[in-house]
Amino acid sequence: MGPFTEQKQNERAESIQKLLDTNPQISDYMKAVWKKHLISLATNEDEYLARVKQVYSLLKPKYRGWISYE
Image (tube, rainbow, N blue to C red; front, side, top):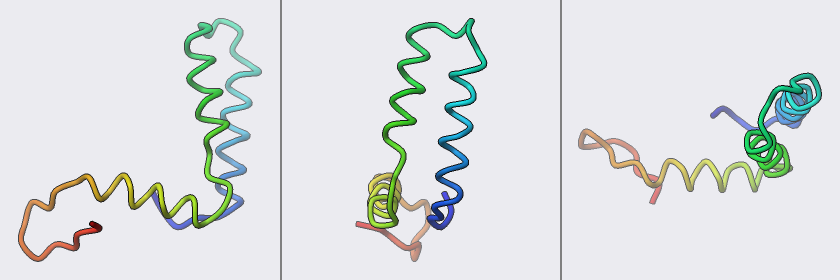
């Protein structure tokens, strides 16, 4: 996960939409999974950073002195 950019989020949305539009053999289950990903893309930096914190705060540092996001 890198810094938030609206352009990158738009690229991700376009890629997912292209996948859904050009793959008729994809199962209904996988369509639902990809649609959920498409709908849940972060739309602003605050939402994006909250998700980054949520993901990385669950990781336990392997070594002392590592930054913790708790």
